[in-house]
Length: 514
Image (cartoon, rainbow, N blue to C red):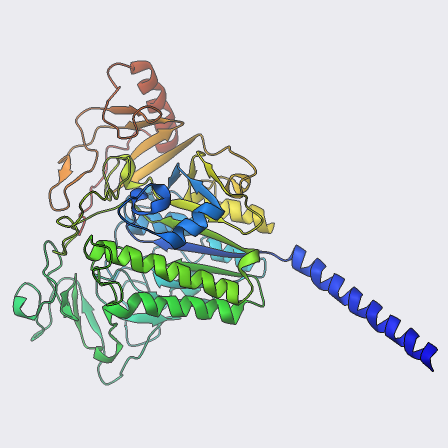
C-alpha cells in the first residue's frame, strides 16, 4: 500500500511540475501589455527627472529612473489634436489638412479604414481601451449628443472608450462611454453650438458675477461649475462633470480597465487632462506646489500615475507591461484663464533648456518628456536618440509581430527598449500648420509671415522673415541663428526638408489658436 501511495505521489508531483513548467513557458511567451500615459501641455522641464528643481514628480521619476529617459524625444506637433492624430496613426499631421485644433463638434478626424495603434494590436489579440482626453472629433459633423455617437474611438480600434470629447475648456462638458453620454437625462437633452448661444443661458462674457475662474482670452461662453468655456451648451445638467474630481474619475476608469482585462494582453491609452486649462486641482492638491494651480495639477497628475502603477503591481501585471510616458506638446502658462500660472512661476522653468513653448516651432513646442519603462526588460539609462511619438505604431508592430506599418512611422523598437542607441536621422516638426526640420543636431526653420510672439500666451512661435538655422549640440536654447554664417549647411537642410515636405510649405493657411 505504501508503495502504491509513493508511486501516486510521484505521479502527482510530476504532473504538478509539468503544469508549472507549462505556465512559466506561457508567461515567458506572452505578449506584453502596452500602456501609453499621455499628459496635456506638460513641458520638458516640468518633471524632476528632466531637471526641475522647484517641482517634484517622484512617480514619473520612477518610470524615468527605471527605464529609458529620452533627451531627444518629440511630439509631432506643438498643439494637441495634430499630436494625438500622429501618435495613433503614425502619420505626419501636416499631411491631413483637417488635423488642426478641433472644436468639440468636429467630425472624427481619423478615417475608419485608417490604421491605428489599437487596430494593429487588435489583430494580435489585444484588448484595447482609451481613458481620458480624445480631441480627435466624433461622429460625422452633426452629432446628436442624446443618442449613441458614431463613429467614435470604438470605430478606430478601441474596444472600450471613456472620454471627454475635446478638452476640459470646451463644451460638451460630459463624459462619453462607448459612444454614449454618461448619466444623461432624456428629459434634459444636450444642445451644443460653437457659433450662437441659447436663449437664457448665462455666459462668461455677460455674467462675470457667476464665475469662480476669470477668463483671459477666448474662454467666455457657457459657464459650467463657475468656469466659462469655449462654445455654447444647453441641457445635460445631470451629465456634466465635476472639474475638481476629473483626475480621480479618469484614474478609477484606467485602474478598472486593468483589473478587468488583465487575463489577456491589453493596450491602454491613458490620456490625462493635466496640466491643460482650466487647471482645477482636487482640494487634496490645492496650494501644494507653491506654483499656483498649474503646479498643483502637475503634482496631481504625478500622484495619479503613482496610484496607477500601484494597481499594476497589485494586479500582478507590472512585470509584463511596457509603459510609454510623454506629452502632446510643450508648456503654456496663461492659456485663456487668470490662474496665477505666470505670477507664481518663480524659478520653475517648464520649457527646460529650450526656447518657445506650445504653438511654437522652437524646440520647447515639440521637444517633450519621453520615457519608456518595462521592468526587467528595459535597463535604465538616458538616451540621446532622436525619437518621435509617431514612431510608436511601427515599433509596437515590430514588438508584437505585426506586418502593419505607417510609412511616416520609423521602426525603432530596439531604441525604445534600449538595445540600440540609433534613432531617427531627421524629423519634420509642426506647429499650427507651419513646419520645420530637425536633422541630426540641426534645426532649420523656414521663413513665415506673421507675429513672432503670441501676445496672449507670451510665447515666441518661430516666425521670421528669413531662414533660421540652429546647432542644438552647442545651442539648445536656439539663441544663435547660423543661417548667414553657415549657408552650406542651410542649403543642405533646405534640400532635405523640401524633399520630404515639398516646396510649397509656405503656402499654408495659418489657424486660429482658440
